[in-house]
Length: 305
Image (cartoon, rainbow, N blue to C red; front, side, top):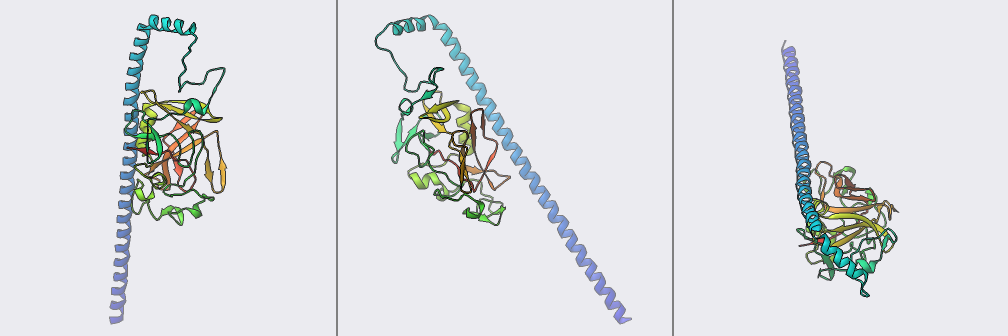
């Protein structure tokens, strides 16, 4: 009898332990699902905020454009008089930032070059935005050159842009030493910012919000400068920068040069930590909603305060 009671007690204890473990697992699963739902809602809210921001500023730009059109129509006679005088003058006037014509769709670098100031030896352009934008990519000697390519959070270019060579990898792509689910850091620290490391001063990589501001507040035109395809980005104040379609590196291969451009931001995708925020450029598309695989090699266009 004693042995039976002991066996029954042990069986009951084992059952209770199994029940406890099952309840703990259920509770852990409920917490995981709740956390995923919170992250999903946060990501959705960010997307809604970005859409609202873009809508607001597009409406503002539309209002300014309508005002400009009214002014242009009102001054049509005066403008035509000026055109007549210039047409018969021996001293024609040219703009340093003229757009390509139908007969000559290629702008020279000399036509484009120009800047308002410099920071630590590197030139910037004031587009009338919250930050100053550099005239060149990191590693580029001129605006039309692609420059160097960087994995997100790494400080120097390299020959192999594979996941195995990535500085912050920890096994599979969903496991990261830094800027992952463990530390939940979504923005690069200054010590991991390639723009600051290579250029110094107050230079840094632009955030996703600053790329959005550039997209919303400026006019983007696909042009050719110095034989390189890319976007001429013009602010409302008339100043411009050029973003060449520099392509990207995957492992040891460079591809898409002169067809696509990929520019990194300092912000990673919150819900997919293996993706960095950035911009995809092509002749018929500008995308800010996708992500760039962190270990691949992409361009960096710095900003300064």
